[in-house]
Image 1: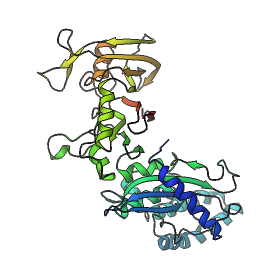
Image 2 (image 1 turned 120 degrees about the horizontal axis):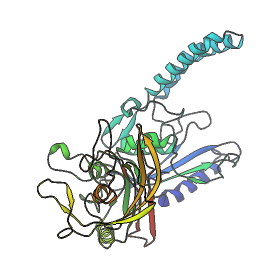
Image 3 (image 1 turned 180 degrees about the horizontal axis):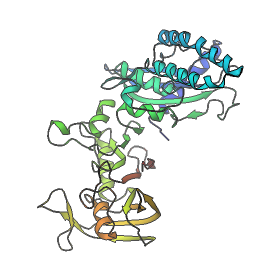
Image 4 (image 1 turned 90 degrees about the horizontal axis):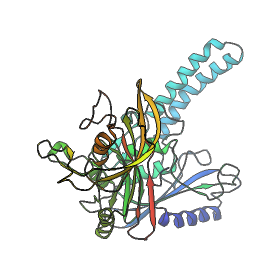
Length: 410
């Protein structure tokens, strides 16, 4: 579940805004059933701004003067609905009279109408505009792109703002699965399909001190050497939150590894979290698929590692000159993938050496990670099946332990 942005600042503003609209008769708890959102952002000049949105339609309309507009052309939407509505209803009437062979024709016409409506959507990102076709989403629920959170984030980038705080609440009589004024996070069903494309990287959480992202496999954590290696997780985060330091990284994930990555928004946070990694005060869990059947239920791998200076960036086990590297593991299940057995393993590295889990899997367990081109074998179209699923550390500002997770994509 996405938290996205710390709701602290936006929550109070949204509650006050709702009370104002109730007082003016614009909203009624007995009549309305809608998700409402508030975004607090920083404009390029430094002033703090806020914007409000609703999910779907409010009182049968997509446009209200106090809310941000939808992400599609309302006039274009109305023209398409007018064009298709009577034709679809005509087929429906004939089907009800027994012409069942027209069901496929009606379905094709409805899909054609939906595709044309989806072509009207424009979402703003830190680097320009995109539509559904640019996202490559093949199948999506009706209403995708209409959530309050999506509207607010797109509006934010359209205005050139930097997002600071976001809160979304259910407004209504509580007859649905939500309670009145219940705070909600962006939905997995619709928002999670669109937001990573708008943000250009999936943001799990952000507040004044930290930003946590779900780095995709194949993306660098930090810039590499050369123009072709400048696109990376830190560059994309910097585009969303331009006020953060130029180098916000406190740790890294291998390019081929996906999962939870935390960055600092100021020097104090960077120093605090970096120190925690150095003193092994963080807790990390990775999920991996390894080749073959691992017989042990659990165990600890203790093999010192160092760089293979003759074959960079490979790491090798070196009992004499290597640095201490310790990884705990737990077998989750044996599975069949592409007709061959693999084992799903939970790894917990107690140290943070380069490629530690990959080397320990290959040489400690004797079972390399599936898709590991350095320490095993990668078949065409295969990814490295290693995912940083959970990261726990002490929040640099609050002093409380926080934990962030990302679902395993394989």
